[in-house]
Length: 359
Image 1 (tube, rainbow, N blue to C red):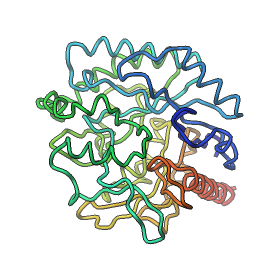
Image 2 (cartoon, one colour; image 1 turned 90 degrees about the vertical axis):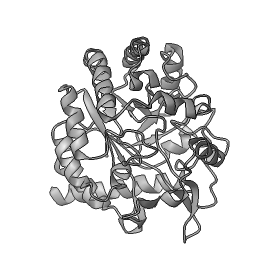
Image 3 (cartoon, helix red, strand yellow; image 1 turned 135 degrees about the vertical axis):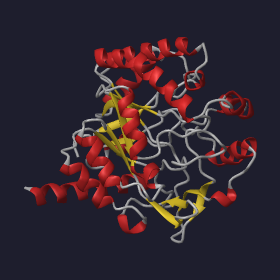
């Protein structure tokens, strides 16, 4: 695929090098971000320029940013949100100067994603992230402490320690934010930034909730096809789009992934795709673990996913998502080198076969 990418956390915080990424066949893009900028602050142009130069010097492209995280004041709808929205617009304008085309983001309260085990041992000896509601801590502080211990000293996206050390205060701030209020606050945010996105030719790509069901009484507004259709109507611009994450949406077995792809890629509302597989231990109990991308190793049909992308003539950006730790690698949970590289090889193989079959 033309725009196959690999998420990278920067030279200071990622044991994987750009040279290693470059050696993965068919990989042309790095999906990056500035992880040391506090959420809500405008991104410094010199730091964006440095990241762009670093990636391009390795012979790769940087056209997708994941993520420019959204300050809680925007999600909650506090009077201070306008200040943070202005900073967000400044960041969009800065990124546009350096050829960025897509910003992946989410609108999840408190937790950007949640698992109960970051190192679930699988029968083949590998380990992967897993979710088991039986092991979900009822106390958010205990959950944060438990998950943070599994990071292997490496920062994890969406789990900013300075923010989550006050997790109970965050819960209190969200106490009066229900689905309707969170949706209204998303519309306020989109209506404010989309004109800037249109002027800068940068598309917003909202990531689905992970997992796509209610936790801790927090509202979830991007769980399925119907939620996505409502979000698309909040602002009709094609610059209001989605990151279709097959793993996140697939964590609800009722979600028809090929149908979702055909609808939103077909409408030009999905510029970015995360492709990963999961394995249900108990689908009724919402119990699953990450798996290899190979269809037979999980519960999702990766051929069906790639066929839907081909049928809708997808020309956007794509990357493999959470991989296992394999071959004695002890890296960032979900973001090791080897299993994601195998995922790229597998997805590109499916794509080649589907394209040649169409010819």
